[in-house]
Image (cartoon, rainbow, N blue to C red; front, side, top):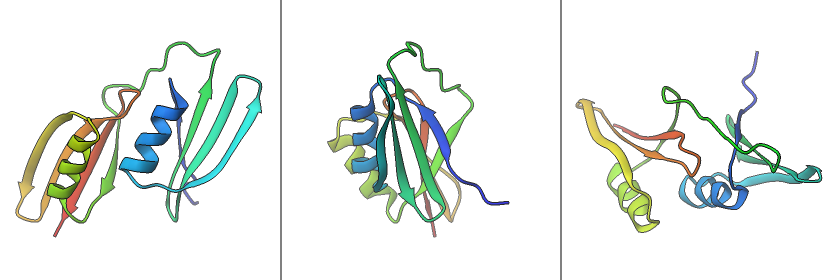
Length: 120
């Protein structure tokens, strides 16, 4: 069995695209109108794929407080600088649970926790 993607309903497609494309660096693979008032965008390549869905009929998007998506980065310090430059507040961290791993969390535009991890 192969994992396909994570689907996220979003409050604002442009804000979410800016975050996942510009901050995380996922390329936009496909973008289309599913029906009037509903847009779908697939981002990512390889094994990292995210599907964003904006539906103007959905007024409340609930991500859940116990869910997060993790992304590996080469330099945690550079990523912390990038998110701060983009006006994104660090939610928590940085943490270092062992000598080889450091990470911190931010919230995406919809309130989903995003973890950036540096492993040595």
